[in-house]
Each structure stands twice: as C-alpha cells, then as structure tokens.
Length: 132
Image (cartoon, rainbow, N blue to C red):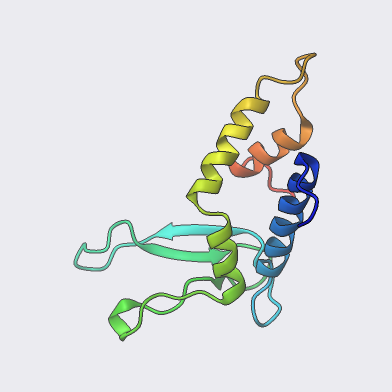
C-alpha cells in the first residue's frame, strides 16, 4: 500500500476484509458458508463442556461443518484454508477494536444521528438482523 492516508488505510482494510469474507462464504464444494454458528455439546461422560461444533447455517438442505477432525482420531481439529484465514483475520483483537468503534459510533454524529451501517452491523452481531 503506497498511499498511507487515513482514508486509504480504511479502504484497504475494508477491501481486505471483504476479500476474506467472500472467500470464506463458500466451502470447497461451492456450498454457502457465509453465516456461522456454534453449538455446544457434551460427551456421554460429561467431559468436553465448552466444546462443540462450528458450522454454517446458510439456507439449504445441509449444515456445513466448518471445523473438521477430532483430537481423539489422532489429529487435531482443522478448518478449510479460506475459513481459517478469515477466522485468523477477525481475531479477538479485531473484535475488541470493532467493539470500541461501535461504542464510539453509538454517540452519534454532531447532530445525534446514528450511522445506519453501524446500526446494521450491531444488529447482525446481536443476531437481530437475519436478512442476507
């Protein structure tokens, strides 16, 4: 990136995140994987609390598992490359920065108006906006 102005940095970050999200929105077979969920489960012995399955919840006849394998089978859990790259890019540090941004935008602009894109993002994060 040659232009390091604040606007250029914002555009570059948006383009990078958009590219990662687009790549992670399908699996290797072309099935949609844009909407993800986590479901906790317990083993019969009661062990494993806090563990569960990461899967895509897009419309369709099947739920696509995003996390594959199990430590009990001799190999650790794994994800497809495009999903792993997205998970790594949107890590907890990014989540905290995004939380700070949303908290700042909650004050509104000089006229008290809330940015509609920020509100849409907040609704999506809270699971309130189910439109795709």
